[in-house]
Image (cartoon, rainbow, N blue to C red; front, side, top):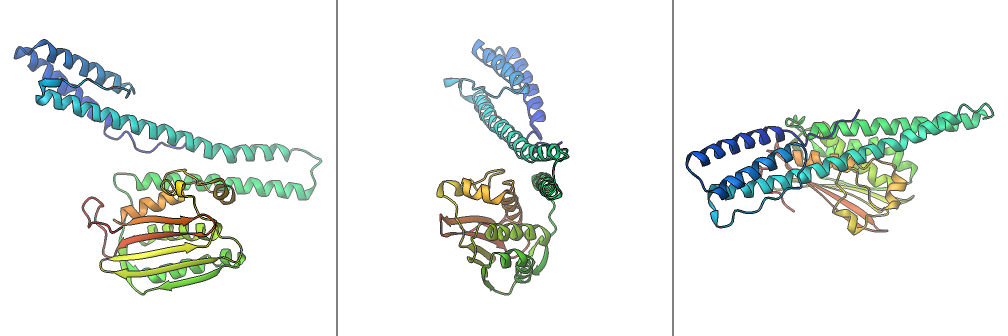
Length: 325
């Protein structure tokens, strides 16, 4: 069973604390002889809190107008919280829908071909073909599960992060060599330009980023194309560019390419067969290092992914250096 992301951490505590605060204000209002408008507004806030606790975030309280003061600030803060929680609920529902869709597709294939295997009239060649499809779909399910666990781990309060100093150029070269069977099969020309240098980072996590970008470059580049990897160092930053001469990504899709489960145009999704989680994981990992990842692409010409990483061990994004564009 797939767990939804930790969207609700702290929400119940916020609601309880807010509710107790409202009760306290209600009591003070009566003790101090507050006017009826204030009391009515406190009743509205209390009722809205109860509705929100039951999952109804479609709530917007009227501003108190000339009343101003702390009560007006409370209403404004409540409305902002309702909007944010409503957006979180929408993301949660989209996540569940996407997970269900991604899991249902391979399960349908497995079920269909398993039933087909019960037909005694199948010859050995057909049986092998069906078993091969079942195996591939099972691996796809396993990959979806692994990626969901990775995302959950990266989004937790204490994500895995063990930085150590190592040679980034050696890591990139070794991963390109590890992909040799794939780029040789597609007769790709390689353009590798790696400046020697070290960074302090989590080597295992960054390995997932480079592997994903390399696999995408190979997957979406036609026979005889070019795959390029470039590493440069400037000031406190390391810059990695992975480019290909593949089918490209439409401009409308580029802004959403790092969203969970998002797949670009039909040409990429149909030829890729991925789950739409790889780039989201890469984005999370790079962000965890205090870096940035961006994409430039031209349909029919190719794609460039650019990753910027601090050379020294990364600080949390909110406390680190300003990231260059």
